Amino acid sequence: MLSVARARFLRITPRKLRVVADLVRGRTVAQAIVILDHTPKHGSAVLKKILKSAQTSAQIKDPAAKPEELRIATLTVDGGPVLKRWMPRAHGRATPIIKRTAHAVVELEKESAPEPKARIAK
Image 1 (tube, rainbow, N blue to C red):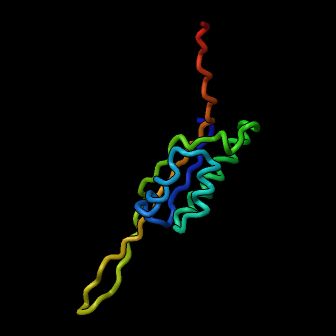
Image 2 (cartoon, rainbow, N blue to C red; image 1 turned 180 degrees about the vertical axis):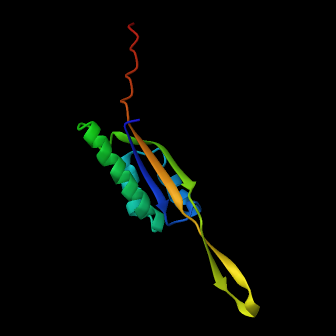
């Protein structure tokens, strides 16, 4: 693990954020940014911001790291605290309004070059 970026208390439901997270999990940072640029979901802008933060942190730790070499090792989206509100309804009743929040964690690692296959001498 080269760098970690966390975003907590995001005002988007974890369910909506996981849909976008599944698109980029396991890809390189360069590929993930292109995918997030062309995804018409609110969660894509949120994840892109977290990913850029992790990329910048990785480049501070290892200046030679390029976006093509950095791979998303883990990308988790968990639920945060829930804001509970009430809406008045007919006949003196009230219905609950649940406003969910999310916590997202991105861990990047440097992609190692594949080892060359050993040649067998004839």
